[in-house]
Image 1: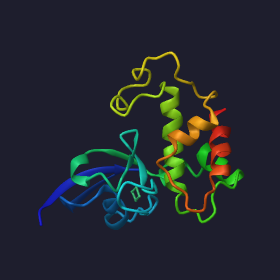
Image 2: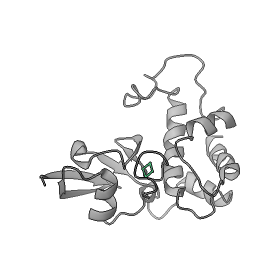
Image 3: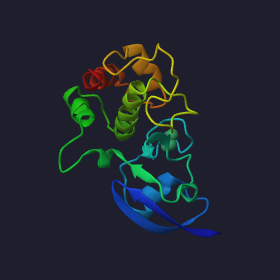
Length: 179
Ligand code: FES
């Protein structure tokens, strides 16, 4: 095996670690750093349970190689809570009972936070998502936060599956934060 040193800044704390080049970001987080906030559902990019923010973009961490992201800033659902205060999206999920078993919830919440930021930026495409807010599509039809429709929420959150089918409560939870 080939091992490489990488630095990952996770929820504000830098970590230097040696990883096999095949180690996914998800396994680096869970198995090497003991951060189990991101969940492993499918390990194949199908379910979204492993969603984290990678330099501000939502990604399926099971599809990212840790070695490819030396120096990256990672935010997990746990890192969204600051100074003991839950993030508004976390509070909204609790208030709306937007889960049953809760396994998909960290990924849902990270994805929802990123999705609203994308909405605010006028739905930048996947290609331009890394650019500053406002650079995205430039089209006039991009909704701003506050006017995102339920259908848009459902479409933009379609990468996050919930096997308990709590979707009927997830959409209103997200909408409460959007408004
Ligand atoms: Fe990564 Fe399912 S565990 S998408």
